[in-house]
Image (cartoon, rainbow, N blue to C red; front, side, top):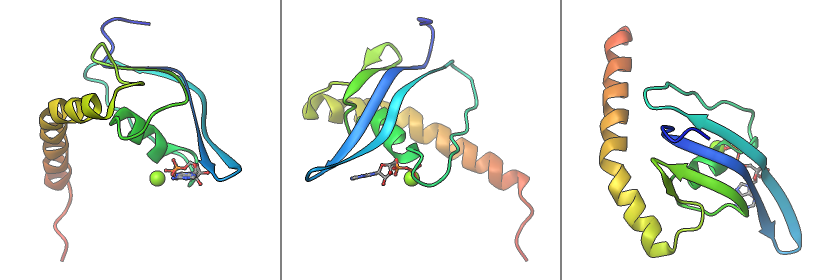
Length: 112
Ligand SMILES: Nc1ncnc2c1ncn2[C@@H]1O[C@H](COP(=O)(O)OP(=O)(O)O)[C@@H](O)[C@H]1O
Ligand SMILES: [Mg+2]
């Protein structure tokens, strides 16, 4: 692991349980994202994209693995700490999303 990584996901697994039915969504996922990297998450429907984003937003918990965001392990936060994490990240997150959308719109031809 690189201690300058923005996000480090290490050996993360997540299985949903519906009664007695188990639905594996992520199996032993690992990756790192460095500051300034531009990342696109793709995959067919059901591949686990939403599950991964939920975990990165601390809206859900992995069964196994570590999720480090700017050095903070968010894999096993309490409800209270997860809310506090989302609050602390939301300003920078929305600032980046807004500038991304502005860039996208500025590069897109106006619709007739
Ligand atoms: N709340 C849930 N309960 C049970 N299974 C779920 C739930 N959310 C997602 N799944 C299952 O987990 C897998 C990954 O889903 P998801 O992360 O939504 O994929 P994607 O966003 O790439 O379409 C799929 O098999 C999906 O049916
Ligand atoms: Mg999805």
